Each structure stands twice: as C-alpha cells, then as structure tokens.
Image 1 (spheres, helix red, strand yellow):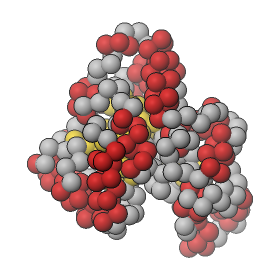
Image 2 (cartoon, one colour; image 1 turned 180 degrees about the vertical axis):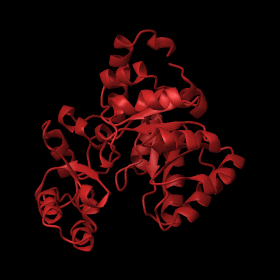
Image 3 (tube, helix red, strand yellow; image 1 turned 135 degrees about the vertical axis):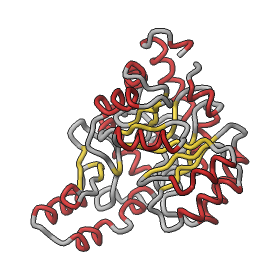
Image 4 (spheres, helix red, strand yellow; image 1 turned 180 degrees about the horizontal axis):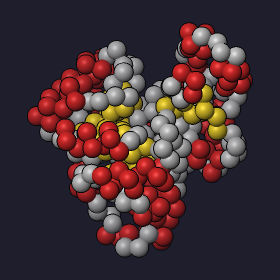
Length: 311
C-alpha cells in the first residue's frame, strides 16, 4: 500500500494512531509503528523531560518511524518543540492552534509537520505555511472537537489543498478507511479503537467502558463556552451538562473536570472521570493487539477499496 503519506512518513500502511493525552505513550506508539502504522506519543501538557524520556524509550522498542503530537496550548510547547528536534523525531503532528512559530525549526531539522485542522481555512493557511500534510478531523472524534463532520470536512479540504490529507473522526475499521479514501484522503487517523489495544496503558475500566458503549452513549460537553469535548456519558457529563444549562460560571465547570481525564485513563474512574472517546465507540467490541487491529483494518480495506493494493 503506497500513498503520498506512506512515502512521506516511511510507513507500511496509511494509518496514524491519534496522539491522545494520557493514552498515547511510548508503549502504544511503538506497538502501532511495529505493526506498520505511524505511532504517536501524545505530549499533551507534559514537561520536556517526560517527553524526552518517552521518545527515548520508544526508540528502544521500535526501529520504525514514529511521531509526537505537540499540543500547542501546553505551557511546555516551546520546550517540547525543541525536544523533538534534539531527539530526531521524524514526524510531528500538532493540535489546538497554529504551529507557525515552530515550522522553520522543524523543517530545518527534516521533520515532517502535519497539523490537525477542523476547517478549510486553516488547511489552506497551513499549506501556505509549508506543512507536509494535514489531518482533517471531523466532529465525530473523541476529545476536543470542531463542528464539521468528517464526511463533509474531508472532501472540502481535499479540494482546497494540494498536499496530502489524512482523515480523522469516526473511523474505526476498514469500511471507514475505504470511505475516507473515496472522499480523497490518503491516510486515516484512528484514536478510540487504539484505546482498547492490549498495549495501551489505559485502565481496564476505561477499555471496558468503550467496549460496552452503545451508539447513543457519546456526549458533548463545553458547547456553552466554546470548548466542546466529546466523551462517553457518565456521572461527570451529567453534572457538567446540568451546570451548563443552569448558567454556572466557567470556573465552576472547569473545577469539575480538573484532572478528570487522568482519573479515568490511569485510575479507572469511569463514573466521575472524563472518558474521551469518539462516536465510533459503539462499534468497538473486542480488545486486540495493535498488530491485530491494523491487520484487520487493512484486510477489510483492501477487500472494499478499488485498487487498494496500489492505493
């Protein structure tokens, strides 16, 4: 399977693993890369020394390319941006902002820069800035979301730019991957399905909550203050939505969610923690290794997508 993305990143299959906060560490990134995709370490709001160690440990676990997702709103973004250069990371994806201030430094180091975009305007801006590709992420995805669906966003971004487009949001199997390619994408990014991978460090309670999810279990909080987040319905989302509807101040709602993602991912509190997951969660019914996940997705994709062998 060859696309501009596989050639750009030196990977076997055009599948990226999402750079999910608290979830995407060196274990998951290395396992996905060893299986032929592109594993990503999610820097989130971690300090530079933590990310440096994550990168070095991943290198001990795989000799395949992997990347780091730099969350641009992190107070440590400047330091992490330098760390990926110093540690020779081949691919960087970015979220929550415009990576323009780091582009020259990364490009001079030969790093492939691939930002996440939620609009055509940002995709065009990123292309003009000289990025290598963009990840068009629809509102079906877990975590922080935009408003456009993957089905509508991806083809519009594909039509608007000449650089490769990676589709993300609501993709969890070969059918979704084939649909994304029909829309013009040259790779897909998958997050929620990798949350339940054997190699993923998420608490078993978190994995089980995704495995038990129904199609209607997805909830969006934060719409009232312009920072929507998609997660699975629980006590926390119920209380958060109650506060939103009552007109509670943002500080009160923020206090409710402080540390809640870690509580769910690491400690397994899936009742009062934040269980970030995409709308695809209702389709995920089994826990597998990263190799099994990728093999299954690729196998289904090749049966469905015309000319998949040379995609």
